[in-house]
Amino acid sequence: MHPNSLPHAKDLLPAIRAACTEAGQLALDLFRPGEKTAARTWSKAGGSPVTEADIGVDTFLHIRLSALLPEAGWLSEETADDAIRLSRRFVWVVDPIDGTRAFMSGSPDWAVCVALLDDGLPIAGVVHAPAADASYSAILGGGAMRNGEPIRTSGVSDLAQARIAGPKPMLDALARQQSFVAVDKIPSLALRLTRIADASIDAGLVSPDSRDWDLAAADLVLSEAGGKLTTAEGGPVLYNRENPIHGILLASGTELLSPLDRALRRMRESTLQGG
Image (cartoon, rainbow, N blue to C red):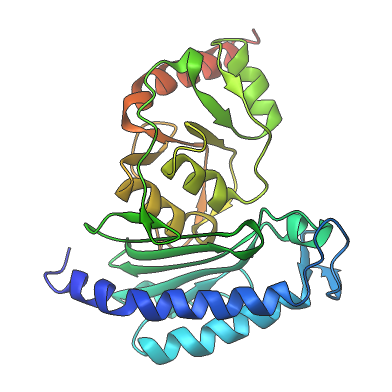
């Protein structure tokens, strides 16, 4: 880590939060609680949905954040990728609306996500969920906050008592190896992680194909709250690679990591054996 990373993060975080708050309001103007969005919608190549709110928020954040740190690269779900980011020390990683399907259907579980990377390491992160009345932020080494109050993971260490969120097929497979308390899927992956950070739940599973923009901001919030996001092999999640796509991931407070990892290994072995 560069010696002047933290001043950058500390100095920039208020402006990042302000940008996310304004961006969230842009999206809220087209959000309809419990109803279909007022935004125009269409499908991207590959079939995933996008709305005019996603594009509007992305454009707003690109202008606002680039003005904050002009030398930074840019990686966003709604912007064509530019390989120049790979040569930049600082990179903005943005998901204008994480949980677009939730946004479209009137569910509050969507968030504006912004992370700042320094040599691939998240040093500042905001996950702003205006419809859920929750705004999370963190800087590296400075702790994590929800709505301005410090947060910590639950500290649960018994997997049988753990509240775990994730895709139903993964939870079903895990349940064949280990008892636990399954909770409803949280459509925003970033919110799945931040709700571990604030102890609303204890752990989360992530299926393959998540992207840097789904993870980077929430990963920092989680780690600063005493939790950890790891690969299925127990390694760290790496950002700003040429291909920003990830495999199976697991997230929890540190006390649950080992028992959760063991249960997942049993699950994978059983799947490989056809059991």
